[in-house]
Image (cartoon, rainbow, N blue to C red; front, top):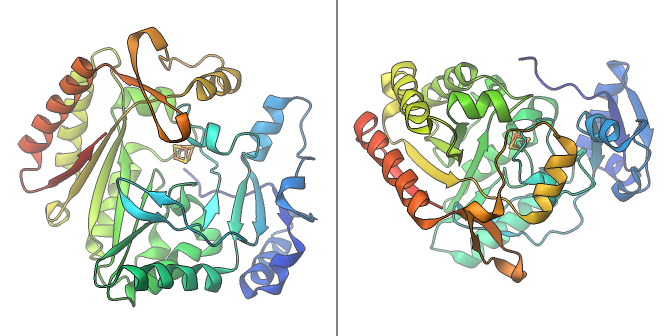
Length: 341
Ligand code: SF4
């Protein structure tokens, strides 16, 4: 698949005070793209489209160049201590995506240009936890790799964290456009993860993302560039013939991944979950989705601030966990499973 290219650009005036803001403006002007000014990202209400659905689709190819004002980082359990805010939104169309609700009616992509402020804040968090390691997750609110060929802000973050003693960076992607990241001076401080899934899940629920093969080829390149490598298998879905589907995934992963990439591998396992709000949004945006979201067949798990989620019932979740663990032990005996949630 081709790297993401926005159709419409908005620039917040404050963004032009930063070198990256000016650089991006110039870059997109040269490409002849339509650039509009906006006083605040909240005012990007005029995204073209005759109805909500069209506006949603157009928003997914709109890039807002902005300034990150809140420099208090969110926590990001269980994969890291903090979420480092580099961008929000994603051009992918994964039906189950958590951004459907977290970004609600702001589905456009917004990239932040005040990187120095963000790095200063990260340094303070590292300092506070010294001598403990502080991990930052860069993919909490977007698929950052998928847009980084345009901004290189992830690359700069990798290099910044690479210079620290106790900082670590991690992110996950479904895109294979990694070439510009291969020569970044990561110093082993960044764990590069790819999201993988059964053929059924990728085919039915992940439109607008790179293919399985493209992701694995990119994983091979990343491992060759000495990045610690990992896979997130998520969302784990109990679809028809799921046992065979996931067995096939691990067989192909084992067969395709170069041998040198199999050292120091990590796996993170996340079962499918949804909220009532997410279900409503998903059904509106992807009315023909095959995504199963029947509350009666799920268990309600209470969450922070009283916002709970529907996960699989214990018996099913345990079966899922045991099956996937068995496959990982069989095909990647030296790897580490970080968590199942
Ligand atoms: Fe959401 Fe990730 Fe899919 Fe983008 S690639 S739509 S962030 S799940």
